[in-house]
Amino acid sequence: MIVCVCHRVSDRDIAIAASSGCPNFDALQDDLRVATACGACRDCACAIFEESRVQGGGQHAHSMAGAIQILRAA
Image 1: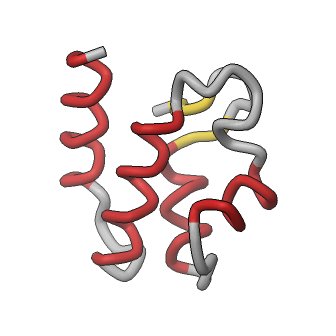
Image 2: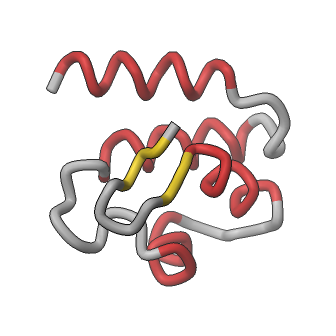
């Protein structure tokens, strides 16, 4: 799913960056530009990034569920 519409960044892009050793969310923003325009996706992108790091970049179904919950709450 597309997380950042402004820069067309998907949950897979974020998970790949996390599993490739991206050290923190600031570095992710530098690399992918996620959440650097309007900022509406910041919480969702951050949740996906953190869960992907915890899971070692493996399956990100739980992060998808968390992202959907965040989007619904907004």
